[in-house]
Length: 255
Image 1 (cartoon, rainbow, N blue to C red):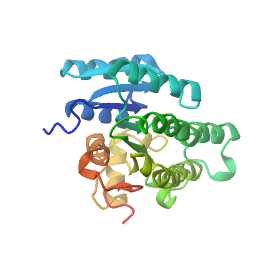
Image 2 (image 1 turned 90 degrees about the vertical axis):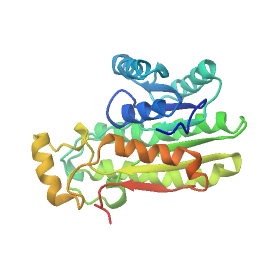
Image 3 (image 1 turned 60 degrees about the horizontal axis):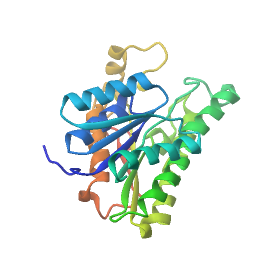
């Protein structure tokens, strides 16, 4: 195991489960002090416990990414506890009204996805950049988009895909806006992964595994550890010249 993030502080939103938890654990394993954020305290505390059991340092902060005051308080708490904000991973996101065609997506579901998946990323970027550009060495930000946002070809996910496509475009534009501030911004676009979000309505994990044999060239879902590895690469000095990239991790589905 390398220790690319020793003495650095990483903030991960949506870190109570799935990809977010895997990313938080991966940063801690490589020496980072980790702040985990989300709306519910209990799963965040579970993530912190896993990090501390492995000898790492972590802090849980409840925050609603749709509220700018919450995001600013989250950044402030990070700096107050650990002294800096070196890496941020904007992972919080939701999939509402899955399986419904565009004409049948409820307005409240659409607005909720916009609020969390797009506005939440924008607000987080703003607070994170404001901090990072004031500190020596700047920082690195990784947004979690989706391979669905790359092509939008999965029936019943068009509204969600639109919000994730927005994250990809926001990433590219923000990267150009702020690279001169010493802040590198990139994205990871996971394909189907071993999380509940990739299950179709009524589908079991066994059903999904069978479907992946034909849906994905690799023949399986990506593990959350594989997605976390891509995030850590973009956040690390190994990717020092990578700016505004959207790294697709989908087993070849968009190739």
